Length: 374
Length: 137
Ligand SMILES: [Zn+2]
Image: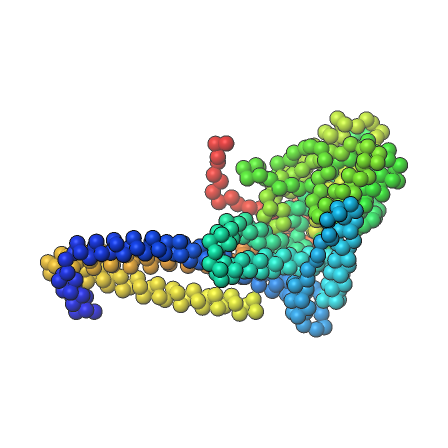
């Protein structure tokens, strides 16, 4: 070793040092002028590749957890792996909106068909699961499906970028990657929460409704919702939420319409409670108040609620609890859990300020009610 | 398939680790050789060797930290979820780890003090913020 180094040193000493250095400089310049962009592309591609690697890991973990949970809860006779793999590739085509009139009903119908199909599939995969567990399994599989899809889309653009070596494809991919990774991580923790049936951050609205209605008689409403008649501050409140504790968002829109129709439109106000995405810098669990239909999802429920309140001109208020996307789908944080009491206080404020004694109000808690009973 | 891919991941990283350690060892030897050369009064040669040695050390430690970070970030952390059980009659409260099947407002085993059925009143995850940076805005 030492001899080799000495030899190298003697050879180097023969050449003038400054000659070498200037030659190196020129080489560097030529390299960067002609291949600078190529080098940058390779570095970016490498970065994307490592994210893709991580995405693949998350996706495989999700699939593994889903299969394990099915085996554990569902006690299937046959190996569920093939069925799960087929399920992960399911797709839904949204309705054509070139002529947008009536598209909401088409969308609702498609979503109903999808839901029924998923439920059948879960029943076949996990015959021993009860209704609550089947709902949780369905949610788990949907999260695994989302992860699978994210992975495939990112892989597509990565391979496309590699094939075309187009700066624009690769740059765009690199630009959105941090956000995509956050979303993927959120889905991964959601998947775990769904598999265990833990309440998630998105369930904050349902939690508010559950706290209000607990201890009162509940009855079922279409579809997958429950309502309880609760006296609050001398008013009669119809508190609505999706039926728990299985993973379920219910059709709050239909439930509100039913209650409004039962009371022939004599509702003083509607208060929607939901978790909402916060902006960076806002406190987690902050409670805010406003007007409008606070409900997430594909928009069908929001549309239906707006339709039914328009008919009777019922005012609508909203109380939201703020959280970020990661918190919304991972197990409920203590800050959000504590915000529930603040939200109830705010609701009482709204009721006192906006209604008279003896009025009827509707309080609807939107969100996935997984892990929350009533 | 999931298990297999994660095991190849560890295999690859151990192979990479080996290469990194070999590079590190080589660059350290080069540094020692450089010292020797310096004492043998071959300053220019020693300078070259020093340069090569330091570059090697820097490069391998950088790679080492990189792979470590990648391994760390590949683990999906399992958060601690606690379930709070309360007795509605006497206010007895107990906190335990979440178990599958728990849900909020589920009636569970009777209270130790008054035999009344207890109720799950809270299920949440506590996040210890490692470094809470306070912004002036
Ligand atoms: Zn007790």
